[in-house]
Amino acid sequence: MSPLSSIRKLRITGETRLNIALDNIPGAVDYIVSLNPHDFVRLRNPMLRKMMSPRISLRRVAAMAGISEAELLEHLAALGGGLEVSTASPVGLTVPLIPPQSPATPPPWMADISDTNIRWVDLLPIDDAQGDPFPPVSIAVKEMAPGAVIGIRHRWQPQPFYDVWAKMGIEWFALVTADQWHIYVFKPPGFSHKYI
Image (tube, rainbow, N blue to C red):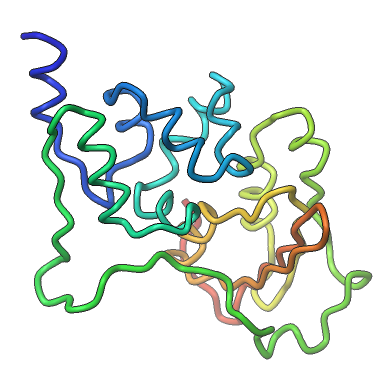
């Protein structure tokens, strides 16, 4: 079987992981990076690409790039020489799926939070060394007591974390300054989700 015929058998949807597209579609890395160089230039680093791309859905890529999911999938399909694309929503869903985002205004649990009364996870040194931010954040969230808030300092808005936290029932609020993001993460009282 030729490589082109195997690409044409690939079917991509919003749920497809980014690594599948990058590994199977010629030119996909350049295209994705061009959509949002600030967030995606790290995909040019082979180690970061290997660590990060399996964690991100194409739906999340579209949200991070500020384009529609359909536009992203159609462009990737064209790069792939006509591979199959599905933009169909699950049965019974009448609105497009939109990945979780930070609320536009501070939630009630932020009322008594200040930068001095919470624990911080400082990812800036990891970001500057082009390391993987996932382990320290995952450990900090796992160790949080219900009702607690932690802060994360990051060079990027950690949108892929939003998908994980939403599934877990964790809440968050993100603010951007000139060169970094502050993300406040809240584990609701009575939280009982088994951490994976």
